[in-house]
Length: 155
Image (cartoon, rainbow, N blue to C red; front, top):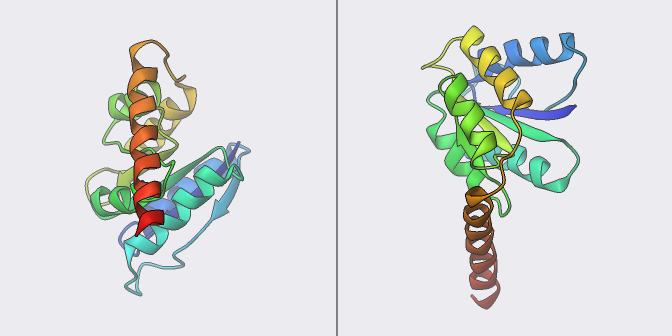
């Protein structure tokens, strides 16, 4: 798999651990930054970069990390076509993929540890998107994206 990762300074240590894990498991990693934990950067820049990579088709999915995971998931979800899910454990990561067809997985480096993130990432990658009632809801999310695009074009 090819996976894009991005984080702000607070998420950098967890991003580094996930990059090491993914490369060790044979995956291709597009590291979109940031480069260290000491220089303060803005999470919207990295959430948007991961989101754009996820919807471009250049990667299979993205991972975005900040201190809590909240801000960077909000930023990623501003990119039309992104379905970013904030995961705190194996269950939330699995359901983000199964029920919400997430294409960006978000973590909060200050609220989960590296092993929980790795376990959650493994569960996300193993999960399959479910059909049935979930497709109707994904279609509704897609319609919201389209309505947002049309609104921007009219402005």
